[in-house]
Length: 303
Image (tube, rainbow, N blue to C red):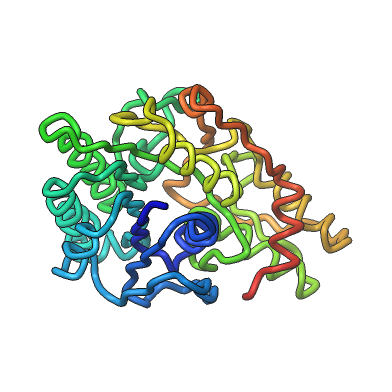
């Protein structure tokens, strides 16, 4: 049995990771309680209310065999308005954990980065070697944390693995999430008997991945020695247009209302899909179709 510290363990992804790993491990969750996820912490899980920038985080890292670092400031708009706040949480908080980990014999440190580090899509599909040109302080801070983590691997032999998720969705997601929030908005409007609102022509595409597939990939990162010192995209490798997404949501609710189109938003990336070749070398295979994932979303969502 290993001791696994999950930062941000009350959040969307962290809570599912907690559910998975607590079955056969001792799990410690560190969270500041500001998470919108209302999922109940499983029995036997140690919940510590604290901040990744504080001494409590340092103490908990010292008790862990594995650290899965999901805690972050993820609001892109807030990062634009308060870049210092974003920096303190995402860069200094990560550095605090890494420095604590350097003093231990950790078996693995999993850093959650973001596809936001890529910026405008220049090549499709987006591989881990795609240029990184973030469009927000959030993207910069996630990339900086990633670079710190990989440097700690090179300089101090810390067993780091980096994950770059694309558009994660789940019934526990924050409705204000800028990446998968479109799903919540479509469901809310369709459920209320209204037409989904699409900005632009709806042919812009994204790579939507179920949180269950994310958890499967994280487990591989924890278990596979080949994952150490490397970066992995987390997606399905399939493009889904916003029009198709709206159609799937309407099908779930048996709605035939016409879609409502509005003016495209400035700065909206046109296309994005992950190259998951690297993750596949670990044995990763996305299992949840968008249709099945959205059906679960509608059945279990709490908004």
